[in-house]
Image (cartoon, rainbow, N blue to C red; front, side):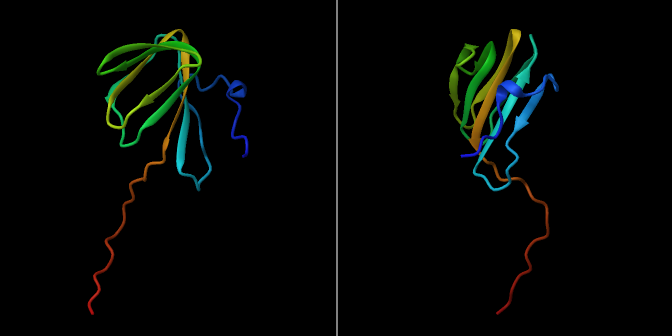
Length: 118
């Protein structure tokens, strides 16, 4: 199994957003390392059509769901079922978390296949 990255070795920039993602083209999983600076947030939203595994890599914060708020700290693991409400609020030292989920099919714009007549 190849090592994809080491989360301790990632650069400090960018300071916010996805700081790492799987780049290998032939895969069934997607994964992203999300970084939020202190006090920053990802507003609550309905998740995509895939279950999402979340692992807090460093920092602390709050996971917001339709059931309320859950404190997050380094080492915590959560499962966010598909199509559920979720949001994140970083604590005073920021929040970094790794997401893992089944790869979603990308939307492709193209022409309709030609009809065949037999």
